[in-house]
Length: 82
Ligand SMILES: [Zn+2]
Image 1 (cartoon, rainbow, N blue to C red):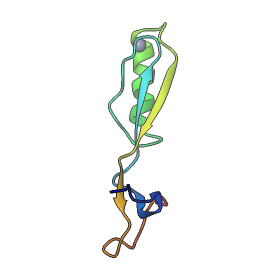
Image 2: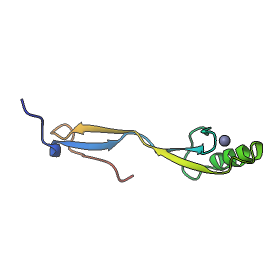
Image 3: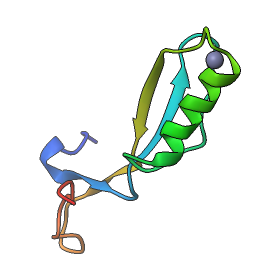
Image 4: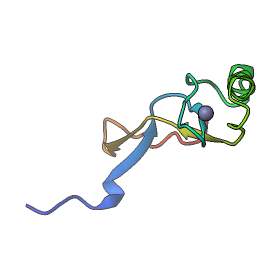
């Protein structure tokens, strides 16, 4: 039995994008938030206020995806455009 061709599969986005801020000095992570969230900015400002030598951060994004078979019961296809 051969594997199905890649064209038979589509990617669907199953949830919203979430962002966390990560301190590059110690690896502490904020709670997840939405893009542009004031809570993420406040977390970084508070973290630096508590540890002044921790002043570089990285924002990480995640988004749940699912690959499903493209067939008669799923003709809608991917929904990467939101
Ligand atoms: Zn830190």
